Image (cartoon, rainbow, N blue to C red; front, side, top):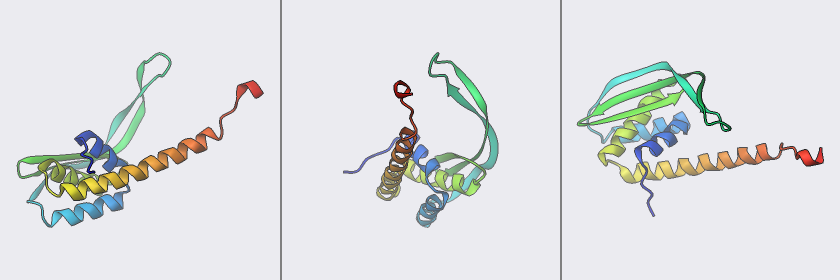
Length: 141
């Protein structure tokens, strides 16, 4: 069964995937894609919002360095933002975003997203188990 991803979820997966595998997929796709125009490919700072869990108040923790890319492929635009200064990762993710939005190579992109989502889920579960192992039961203190 093929899972279709929303643009938001696909971009979240791409931005958290290793840069080298995102670039490898984009390189494979580029040979069969229409001409790509790079509109923006730069680094910058964005404010990192955080919600206080007790009161629900939103505040900003500080600034985070990001790389963003905005491309045009025919009539479709692709966009991506990743943390850090890897502008090639952002550019590759934007190419994949535009291809997916165009309906090109959907099967290959969906398979890639599914594989990466599974790897990210497994990593999150591993981290949560490690954190849980450090929990202190206050009743036994």
